[in-house]
Length: 378
Ligand code: C2E
Ligand code: MG
Ligand code: MG
Image 1 (cartoon, rainbow, N blue to C red):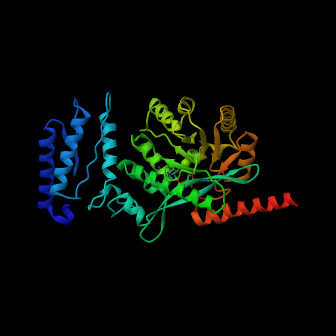
Image 2 (cartoon, rainbow, N blue to C red):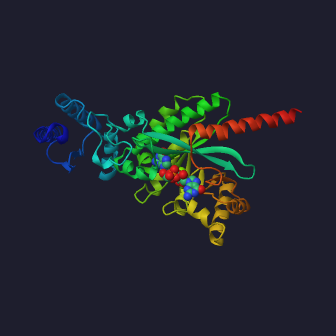
Image 3 (cartoon, rainbow, N blue to C red):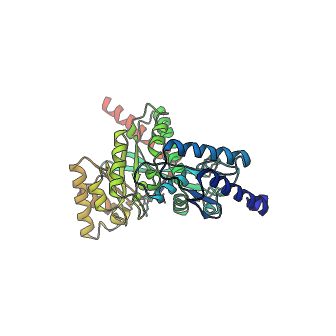
């Protein structure tokens, strides 16, 4: 605002926000976190009172500064942590579209210069690549993992390592994760319509997204647009992080997702964060062995034993087990011998743009299927 409208305008705007917050919520619990973000907490009240105060605030801000301010609110009963609540409210706030571009914190991201992630998506600044998942003994396609890519102004592809963390810090990742899910369901339905059969797709879900109280409802709303697809056609891959949910929160969340027929896989198992406690304690539908473990599997007997044991547990408890980061035939030999038959990695293919994935995998497997059927008929 200072840049486009000048400091006097910016100063007045801040003063107005502060005064309105104080008038509505009282001066006790109002904080300014950084340049232009205010937080207010409203404890010991009812949800009805809180909601009506928020409505007054929204109306007052909008009246004076239409479309220039973002407001995110959230409510919880009982015991809560201020940090979780503020993070939730912030991520909701960031999904609101205004006429002001996104903050400087996301300047390196493909969202740079856009007013919302949605606008950046619509402008083609993100694209989804697909990496095949292969049944190693037969070489057949069993699914794909959707991996997001940014697109620079010059059309260059930006890897997720350049922007995922920034979007997680801003809470914007939720919007992106939901967009990837929506796009994947759309594609699965399109592929089905073209006669390619049902292709299960794994999508990555940030722990920030998973922890958000409205995510499940948003996923169900997206799914409701594709009533013919089974709920578990998307496999939600979750990576734990140092700042992630605790085990109890994970368990509760997974239970809620399971009740809605959704499938969750623990990603990056064997890496820094995805730990044994989580694997044993939360009811995941599958596990993805991290590439660091697969890298070692041919040379390190302990890594090999870990893979064998995990594959056995998965078999026993009906969980999926996928090895990622396969680059060499020797790794496949060891993995098959250890009882893991599903793999993903550069040995088979890199993540591919959609049209290439369709050409190389879906059209090919349909042709193969047709010729096997013809042979059988003969
Ligand atoms: P991930 O989910 O563990 O995805 C696997 C990563 O390993 C991908 O990196 C993939 O390109 C790479 N990979 C696959 N095969 C091989 C191999 O044989 N060797 C090696 N060295 N690497 C291989 P990518 O696409 O750069 O994605 C990195 C991470 O970014 C993903 O790790 C995932 O955690 C995150 N990510 C990607 N898309 C999304 C998304 O839509 N939402 C969220 N929240 N995170 C995403
Ligand atoms: Mg993954
Ligand atoms: Mg992984």
